[in-house]
Structure formats: C-alpha cells, structure tokens
Picture (cartoon, rainbow, N blue to C red):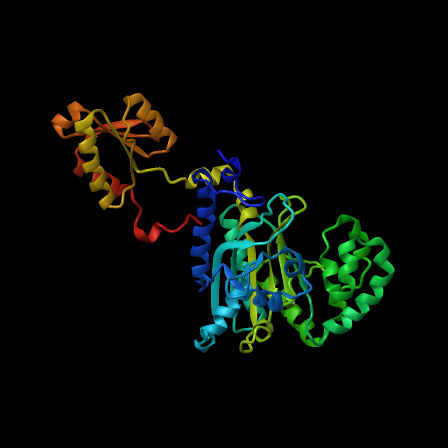
Length: 430
C-alpha cells in the first residue's frame, strides 16, 4: 500500500462530518445576517489570471512575491489559485456591468483561498474566508454599517473581539508620508528583521505590518500616518469615528495598522481576539476606491472585509456547537426482515414530509440500535417488532426525557409536525 496517497498535503486538512456542524453554524448565521443588511451572495472561480492578483494586490506584497500558487496552463497562460477574493469580486462586478444597477452593490462570499504560508495555529495553505464588499459609495456610514454587521455575526456565535481602526491615507497624502517614513526607517534598519529591511525600500508602509516581536519597539518609534493625513482623509476618518460612536461601537485607534494589500486607501480596520495567541486577527478590511480602475474597470468606490473562518471555528463554545447539532428526527429500530420492509416504508413517508430519518440496515439487537440512536443524537426512536407490525402501532421513545408512547404512523406525523416551528421562526437562533 502506498501510504503517501493516504495523507493530505501539508497545510491542508479534511473537514470531517463530526466537525462540519461548526462551519455550517457560522455559514448559516452569516447568510442570515448578511441578508438583513441587503447583501447577496456571489461565487467566483477558484482560479484566475495571475495578473489579476499581481496588479490588484501589488507586486511587492508577500502574497504575490512568495505565497501564491501559480502555474502555466496548456495554453501558456499564467493561472493562480485565488489567495483572496476582493480582486475577483471587483473583476466580476466590472465584467458583468453590475455598476449599471441602481444604488450601491452589496455582495458577500464564502469559500476557500490558497496561500503557501508557514504552518501556524489557525493558518492553513487552503483556508476559508467569509467576506463582503460594498461597491458604489465612499460614505463612512457604509463602513460603520459593515462593521456593525460583522460584530453582530460574531456576537451571534458567542465570539467577542476588539475593533482596531486606522486611516492609511490616499494618493494625495500617502506619498509624502512614505518619504518621511523612509527617512525615519534608515535609523531603525539595523534593528529590524530581514523582511522589514527588504520592504523598507520597495514597500515601506508594509514595515508597519511586521509581526516580528523584536521589531515592534523600533516600529513604535516611526511616525504615525494619522499625523500626516490630507484634509479629505482626516475628515473621512473623523466622520467614520463619529458614526461608530453614534452606533455605540467601541474602537481603538491603531496608528501602525495597515492592510497587507496595496489597494487600500483611507479606512483600514481589524477585529482581533485575545484567545488566538500571536495570530489574533479574526477580521480585516478597509476601503479600496481605486481597485477597479487598477484592474481596467470603471471608477467605483469600494469597502469590504474578509473574516478567517478557520480561526472563528476555533473559538466556538462546545455548548453552542452541541446545541446546533442536527441529529435525525427519527431513528427507526427494527427487528427482522418484515420489520425492515415496514421501516423503509415509514421512512419514505416521514422524509416526504420533511422529517430526517436514519435506519441502520445491519439491524442488530434493540439494545445496540438504541445505543447507536443515542450516539447519533436522534430526537426520537420508533421501534418496529412483530407485535408492532401486528397492531400497526409503534413504540415511540423521545430521547430527551425517555418518555414512551404508542402511535400509528399518522399520529407520529401529526406529533412531529406540531414540534416543527413555523417557517417564520426557522431562522438561526440569533
């Protein structure tokens, strides 16, 4: 046996049925909450032209320089597995002329991304993100609404975090700040890591994004970009803070906070958790008003975020996960061939009316089938033996409190239908 084929690639993993309820819980609540704010789902390809990311993200970023999975296809074109989704969403927005619709466009996505990174806790080479983009407005109230939506989602799954905000300026004020930053960096270069030294010339702003702890005391000595904003950026940042305060959203100004992608301007933000160690960012995002033009599309203002689904899953409480487990409504325990035939018929009737059923076709003793029903977290067990077949009445056991009673199939259906909440109440428990 070739065991190398029985192991997944480094930095990837299988999400098994026993774990998937965590992911589905977050995804379901995200879809519900995003719809409340007027967002619609978009799904873009996992592969795109390499130039889309090289131009959109920036050629001097670590993502483009070191982390992308890139290959040449049969036609000789350079193709890349998407390392992030914003560039893809903006490409789709321009390609399909979505800007012709009235008002702002609100889109969200859920799916895998790919980066060749060092393996760390909560960081994978195939990882998953939930993100959203608002295209067509530069109003800071839009930014506050998006932050509010994210915090509502986090709260709905029992996760708290600190909101960090900053402004990274724009093409009018950032160049002069970068010149000042480069001058100040020269004095600190001997104390900085190799990555910071490399970035200091080609992409000086990225030095502020360094996660090496030995660099932090020296980075703290560098000038803050918020002290060098132009009037328009300072006004935008002030209004953003004002809207946050009116919404009752607590924030902390983080003057060294920059995003790792070149397309950001003005507002940048992160939501961090104290429960994740060094890799503590749950959500990151900001404004990107020139990205569409950089990609060759029409001018359009944009604001969005990406949330690390892998890290968020790690923070879910076991109590919340257990409460969301979807065991079958009915486990059909049968004894004998005739009972199996009847169990199959009953299962078809229950499923046709929307009730999940489970049969263990190997059968076995009643005791072993009850153990399995308990393991599967079945809500009820329906027992079918010779006596039940003769009477056409079946013993029902409610697993939550062990209550038992006899019922016909029609009576069971009436009971199950009564337990089901009205359609208006079937949304996630927020």
